[in-house]
Amino acid sequence: MNTREIHALRKKFIFIFMASIILSVGVIGLALNSVTRIINRTSIHRTLDGIIENQDDIEAILSDTDDPFSDDANFIQAFSSYISRYRHICLVSRSSDGTFTTAGYFGYGSGSPGTGGGNDAVSARYTEYARKAIDSGNKYGRYGMYYYELSSSEDGSAVVAFIDCTAEINAGSRLLTLTFIIGLIALLISYLLVKRFSLRIIQPAIENSRRQKEFITNANHELKTPLAAIRANTELTEIMNGPSEWTASTLSQVDRMNGLIQNLVMITRAAEQEDKSELSEIDVTKAVNESR
Image (tube, rainbow, N blue to C red; front, side, top):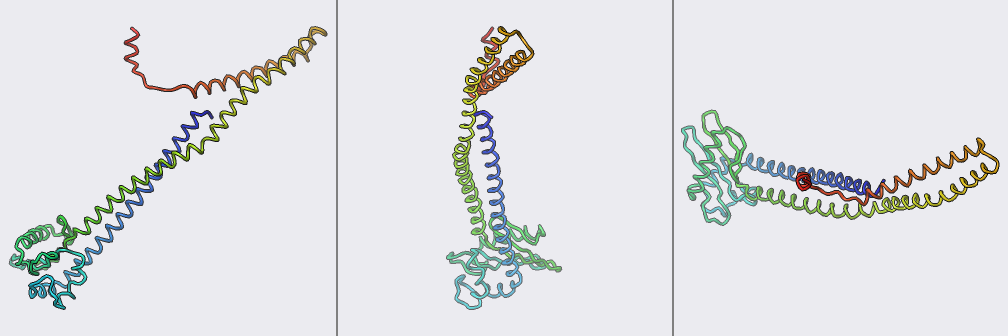
């Protein structure tokens, strides 16, 4: 194996190693983001289920509460598991005659009352989302940063619970971005390390190849000297005693040995020329036109 083949093998190793790293990092990143998304989605659905199950109590409490930061014990107990996580919590009810009413907790520090009537713009937005949710018929869904759950009755009435999941969605986006950035950094570091250490690993192989070439070159000179002496002695014997089958066999083996040595030297020189050659792209069309 010559130096060029060793370097080609090194590049192939680097390619396979980096492909494995990319696959591993991709699978880990995908699994991490998928699990986080599933956990967040499960938590959101559980929250919505809790709001739907306690809708009557929540609507009654919100209707009696003018301040979203009320110290009322019932209000705090009803929303203790929600207020700490979600900016907006809203219930939109549609009666059997098609009338919509909203009740919700709208934002931290906004100064808006607990009931929907205190913030017409927010109420209108949630009412529009509720219409779309009811028309779609899906139990769970999402509009922008808001997740909802729909609960319908046979008499045509329906309740849609909304929660603002801006924090969760932004956290998921940040996690995805961080995963991508960290993955790129890990790939860059891995590439630099494997490139550096692979070069050190192949150095012994390159050195062995060089020594092998030197040995063959030196052997050419070392072996030709005794072969020349054997040929001279054999030819002298033939001159003195005449040719025989033994001298002919000896000369034949000397010629065969010389041929083998010559082949080894030719192979070594061809490998050396291949290592020294540099491949480059040329414009064949331009070369042909210039030769005319």
